[in-house]
Length: 492
Image 1 (tube, rainbow, N blue to C red):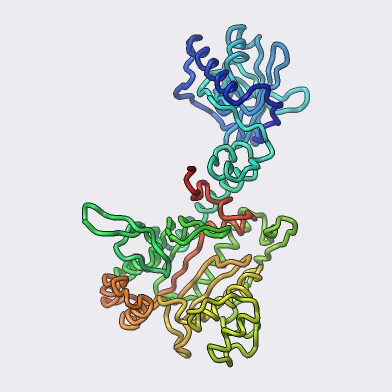
Image 2: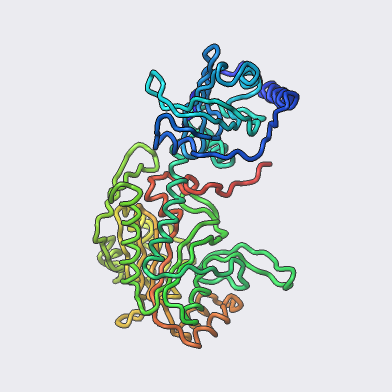
């Protein structure tokens, strides 16, 4: 559906808009409906071309993306998200009046419906021979003239529809994303997981350490928060007797934007009663490999570096490495855990890692981990047995009470999925949440603690950042390239 280059404009933008308004009036005067209604179709343009059968009667609708007039006949390309199809319109087939109306009143960018039959031109082009053409919607603004993608990223993200019209790569990514999300649901359901829905607005923002978006519920006369995670509600369902559940929906974290973070993002969260973090890691590994083999042609995924000049290949072949957090830090400095907290701060600075003046000891270690272990990691790596301070909702390791039984899956320098053996001891859970909340004890979800006191089975849990996963699998450069309408600052 890549439109052909448009000729250099002969008119100013205001003149072009005026010309289109005049054509709109011309359609009305000719008795045509410039913003028509129902048009029954037999095929989409791209699908018809992909599964082409000659001499087939068809009805197809779409946007005119290019046109080539040849005296008493015109070739034009009709397209939508499925692709494009060449059409042939001749004066002899539709009559003088209808042909003149098309030439004089229909523009590139307009939507039309065509009825006719398929054929192959002398040049071997799959085409539709039109017997009847119906204008369906007048475009009052011309499409952009630069057909090599939208160069201005502000336009690309703010007017995504223009990007999708002109950029084959963008269309491919978003169609693939939709199919991948459907495949994830199928993968989970085929393994016995039940999809559920939990509240988007919560009176206590829990399930992760993040700054929430705040709102106010007037009917209840109380402040509310857009959820940062569905975890605490999903665990209530484990208490209720559900054994395999998942939710695939939006989370919101009021923490800025970057190449890898959008404040509104899609997350898969799942819980499996009587499982543990190792079993959840197997589930995730199988799912991601299934997606790669289904949509990417195999387990080797090409990625460009951030500068766009170097291409590297992610190798998803199983089994994926699983290494303890402490062993990875010892790979940075074998004596890391022999130092005092002050020595670790000094060593971090020597390693070029910026440390805040009030960082606790575990935060210093985590910053070194993020910069020197996580960021350079390209192929899949499960980082296991992390410090308990990092994951207050995970189960303590039975042999070492300073760590919890978790994994963090890193691919292409970013966390794709955390997985836990879930903490189900309400006494320890309260202690962890109180420590996390500090003096702000109102942030503790007492209803969640109450539910745990009724008994929650041991369970494994996972989260998967869908946007980051799609980035990794499609080779997209940034998170905005896999989110249809990313957050942008309002125009002044």
